[in-house]
Structures are given as C-alpha cells and as structure tokens.
Length: 482
Image (cartoon, rainbow, N blue to C red; front, side):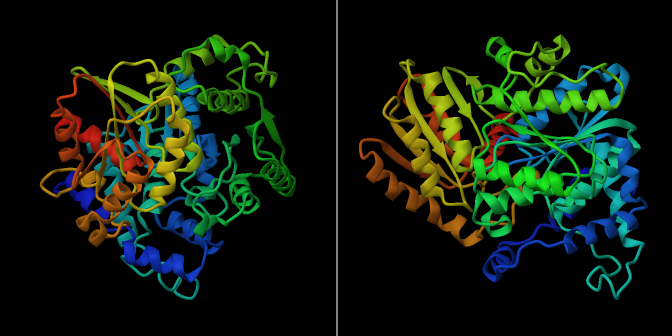
C-alpha cells in the first residue's frame, strides 16, 4: 500500500469499467437488471467487512429521479451542512463526476483528498483480493474478482463515510432505484424522487409507469418519502402504489413561494422545485435525528428556517446552469443530456442572454444518446429568442494530443466512432437543416474546441456548452490547464 499512488488507484478503478462492446451486447440482449444485482452488492459488502445494517448509522437521505436528483442532493447536503457543528461530518455520494472521480465522494461538501481516496480505495481492493464467495451462489465472484466501476465506488463511499465518522449522508441513485447498487440501504431517514421522465430505457423500461416503478424501488418501510408536486400523473400513481407496497408514505412537496425571493446557489428558475424537495428531505433527516423540533410545513406559503435558506443560497454545484467569465467571453455550462434537462438548461440560457449584444456560440457533445434529438430539444427552447452565429461539435476527448484526463477516461463509447468524428459529422449535417446561416465547425477534442473559440475574432461571446457532463467536465479541466 505504501507504494500505491492516486494514479495507481485511478488506473485500477478504470479497469472496472464496462467497455462499449459489452454494454451494447447487454442492450441488444434485452436483459435488464434484476434482484441478483442487489444480492451481489450485499455479498460484496460482506467481503469488505460490513453488513448492510452497518450503514443505518449514517442516517442516509436517498434520492432518485430522472432530472434534478443531483441538484436536489447538493441542496440537501448544503442544508445539512448548516448543522455541521452537531453533525460533525456529512457525506455526499453523487455521480457522475466532472473533473475528478473524488468529487463523487465528499465530506462536508469537499471532494475526498487524493491521499484518503487512495487509502480507502486500497482498503477495499485488498479486502476483495483476500476474500471469497460461495461458488454455488456466486459462481462469477471468484477470488480476486471485483465489482464494476459504479458498484466499487458505492462500496468505497460506505467505507469512507463510516471511517470518517459521518453522522448523516446524502446518496444519489446511479440509475433507477430498485436494482441500483445504492439500494442496499436498509433504513434511510428519508427518500426523495425528483422529476420523472424517459431515460435509460434499455435498463428501466420504455414507459413512465416502468420508470416510476424502478425509481420507487428505493422506498423502505417506515422511511418517509417525498416527491415534487408536478410529477406526471401516471408516474405519481405508481409512486403511491410503491409506497403502499413498502409500508410507507410519499408526500408531495410544493414549490415554496419564499424561494421566489431567494438567490439559489444553483441558477435556473426550475431549481426552485429541486430546492423545495431538498427542504423537505433535510427537514425529515434533521427531525429524525432530533436536531430540529418540528418538520417544515409542506405548504407553499410556509416560512422556511433561516438556516435552510442559507444552505440553499450557499449550494455550489458545478456544471449545472453555471456561468464563467473568461476574458471578455461568458461561458454558460450545463451537462444536460436528457430531453427534460436540456430543455430546462436551454430555457435558462436563452433567458439570461436574450438581451446580450454579444455573438452566440454553441459547443455541443453527446456520444452515446440520441444527439440529434437533443439538439432539436435545445433549439426549440432557445429559438427564436437566440440565434447562434457559430456552432461547434466536438468529441469527449480532453486534450488535443488525443488523450483523456485520467479521471475522465470512458470506455463506454465507441472508440472508432470518436476517432472518425462520426457523431460530430452527422450533427453538422443536421445543423445545416436547422440553421444554414450558422458557421459550423468540428473539432477532435475539447481543448481544440476551446482554442477555436478563444481565437474567434467576433468580439465578446456568449458560449453555451451542453449535451454531456463529460464535455462540461473536460472543459473545466482544460480551463484548469491540468
């Protein structure tokens, strides 16, 4: 262990990613996750020296949804952080990351240090090397075998938060809920469901009913659940059925009117809904731990505690409706990559820059989803208020040399398509039909896209960056120059 470095840990972690061919084979097979995924997580937990009951002491808030679950988790964490003097350490587990994988595991809002990440990583890695599973029950979990990338990080998060003495933790579901690796949590203090929509259909189902069923899978007996008021009707019906099955309740949270006069730490009017859900979740968590005397009243006109408002104002969540000024240029970043999220982000962008005299640039990347559809969702929300003078389609490769930042290596995209710029060329042809007056460029890397934009002689620019968290994260790394 003494000789192991952070880079060693990242290289080992990256080896656990599923490659593109395997992912496509699973999709084409039509096989979706099943309860075996949870049984395996319970077994991996045993092999690293814990039982799932050990995690109950973390007083976990468990959050799922299609759009807004990450922002809701960030808001909830920030509210809890206002009670840090009593909670000591507060854990936050989210995904994906932007710059560094350490962002997924945070203590008191800060990514785990490289030293602690490396230490705790090899605690888990070595325990898995030195333990075995019953062959008749888990034939593929042989000595030395490891769980996949996300499962390993989930195990690492539990280990880290217990070792760091966290008294409360916020967990964002990876995908879905019922069979997600975070769903070994037995007794969350509260569960939350952000806006439901259609996404990850190959794993969760094609309809809102199926997706809501999966998301409602995080509900646990006697653990209060909360969701937003404006869920799709059928989705809400399924959530209520799931709550009844699990011997709990799911309450609708209004968008609190008081937030109309609050500058939230994450921009965008739609964030008021996520912030309201976070208020209910944090309130339930703090009440369950005896740190507040009563829960916040779920009435739109309720007066929220000052500490809650401060938490919402102090929330910092990069890559979500984020504005960065560099020189004379204004960059508007959002990793939106679903229909609902890209419409929301595009609405935010068009509202902010509608009266700006600066020329407009779109920087877009999406390698694995329906990129053409996402482009149309964005344009339909932005046009006719805003027109782009220059449109750039790039890959998710970080550097002009063709290399990725180590923390941003992704094996779940088609390497050949990336190298051939296939998606980018298709998008360029599509854009000619959308707005033939725009100047269109294609770049092989995020660094080269940034250099192109910085070299434009059009005066000050408003640059909208969207379509992928990989793009936004890679751009931030390029900005950092690391």
